[in-house]
Length: 262
Image (cartoon, rainbow, N blue to C red):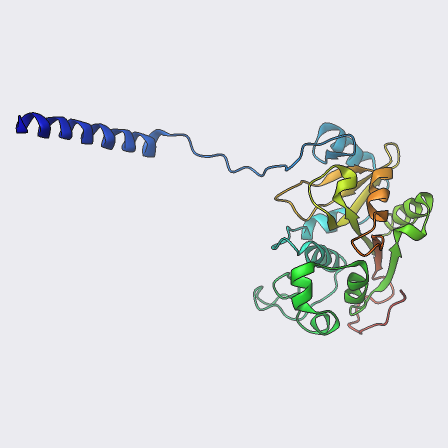
């Protein structure tokens, strides 16, 4: 009887071991591809879709697109959309940071070192890490750099004025546009969010947004009317969001700290 029990136990253990080995060596690997939180809808489409690629190819408003793509990166924290956007914008405009501790012999801006120097003296790092950057905060950050800074609270401008200002900036290789908008207006998951604006397609009236939350959404062509409404959407204090136009043309080769025009 004991032999029977031992024999049965041995067979059972052998079956478990065999199954474990099979799963280890022969099961298919998990798919870790990035996930889009919500699928494309009438307000946005993926930039590498057939129609998205066509818009990119035919757009006449993309002067700084490839520089932005060169330095495009994901935010490293949930509240760092503004910081990631600022890093992409400053690097694409060839603005030098303090020497990086992480990138050997490099003067590129990084999210990890964003608060070094004048930026950390201008805004509160602790509050920013917790709450992110407002439109006013971002303007203050950019004014510490050798740039002309123009900030626009969207509620004070018509749709046509906003569209024209952004379109014009997108034809200038010395300018970069960054926007603060509300995701809900685009039927996306989330609330207030910063990202660079990289291009405009006149025929479809759509803007190419390089979403810095790349783990949630890809770069996307966004309906122009909906995007402007998303910038006009007020925050929890009743203040509308908006956009900044950054210009390095007047200060190339300098490192002066400027009191740029609001």
